[in-house]
Image 1: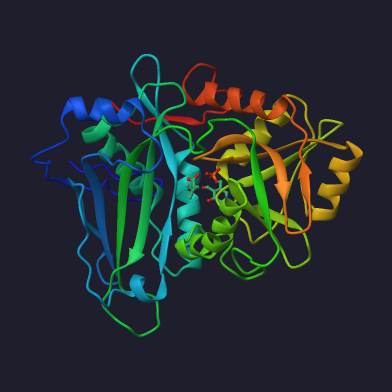
Image 2 (image 1 turned 135 degrees about the vertical axis):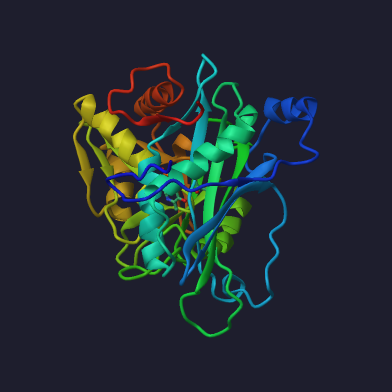
Length: 367
Ligand code: PLP
Ligand code: COI
């Protein structure tokens, strides 16, 4: 009997399963999980759901991980109609597997879809895709400290048509990759490069709030410039000189009076890590401000001692202190304090089941 969810009026998808005929051996998998790096190795399976304008979401499958065959005229290859998400699965000490605020990633994928004229994947289907993949590849969730299985849902225009309009055929996929620290040095403070020549996404009305590949493509040249200067990430400004975010993370400033300030802007990605960290800080009695924050206020605050910590946050990087800001005309050391790492500890304690999940953020994926 098919059970219809009364809230969404959706029946669960019925996934077809094609198991991998030659999956990774347990020995090789353990070798990978011992030092997973970031985004280098992938599990044995992937999820694939088709969408068409006439048929909606259909043909849900769990199949062996492998190349996707595309027509050379597939719209994504020409016009970049693509969106993605990033979310992690954590193994708890009792062996169970949990993820963190997946409803938020589902909602953000839907917002990205609206902006990029792609179909919205209903939240129950998003959650089901995570569960289906974990059901076959759960053994890939590592158990080492600060390790996780990074889940990468993505969607793109696969219709073979060169006319410039929203595609009538789309694919949603989910792949997974065991992950350790995103930055090579672990949680050591990183230096960041201020890009004064390039923006990551256009401001008002642009695509900055959508998690779409083009924003990341636009960040690659300034990111390479950052790397040339020994910086781990690039930070972007808006045309008015306000701080936006890093190439792949949000930024938070801590003031001497304990206030946390983070940029409010419609051209940045609304980070789920940032939202969670700000909530944990508010729970501890910190004031939290989301408002425009200029480069001038940043530099003046560091010079006067009014800013006592700066940190980056995101799913991949968790929380990473920023220890230096470099630009073409200056180099400012950034003050290091205890709060960033305390908040990181609290967040990861919740994610790994070591601290009480008072906000109901965890969702069990196995069983
Ligand atoms: N900003 C950008 C550009 C990102 O790519 C990310 C990572 O997903 C974030 C911010 C942080 O978002 P979240 O905390 O939801 O991972
Ligand atoms: C994430 O944290 O999930 C990101 O998207 C950042 C980067 C790896 C693209």
